[in-house]
Image (tube, rainbow, N blue to C red; front, side, top):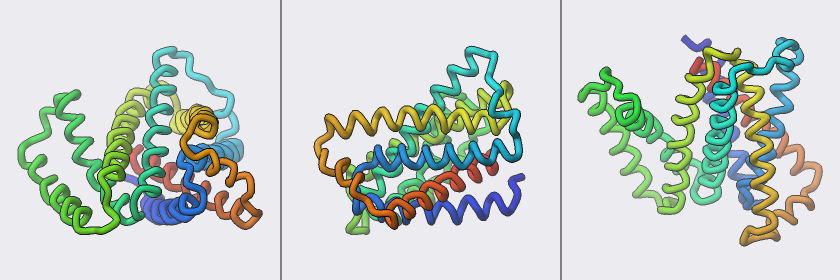
Length: 242
């Protein structure tokens, strides 16, 4: 069972990360750069945490090539999910984006039933998801901020995060949680900066990436706090799921 502090931190940092991300994207509508920056701040935070409490974990590497392959793949899926989640804040209001994220349990159950063929997925358990789906549908469709594009982006995040959780379960027997999370942030950070660079060069709105360089110190500090909230949200979520 997850510690109460981790559950509280997960809920509080989720709200703070979402609200601050929306504010940043209103000024600088570039989800790739925001995601890359969030991963950079999160990687720095966890590097400091690991060096302080688990200094030997920094130098640990998996000797299992298959586990390393799953690790890189999970980082890729993780980065796609985060970028889609941030793009959802740009496409829709924070509340609608978070409402669409409530469909993640439905995606998780569907994936489990399709690929894992879990015999414990009874009709009653599947039926318990019907109120969630109905509530999301009624809440989203009646809101003026809802958009089909935003829903598609949110559903991509809903698919990515359960897939990443399934990959993490495969990796857990081969490496400690701290090493896995530290390495995932590292690979996801590199991938996001590559995507951010490509989008800045070939994207439809190069002015957005140029505007990022003109941010003042107050905006920079605000983005750092956003990255810290992002880190706490995902680290506490990892502790709750472990």
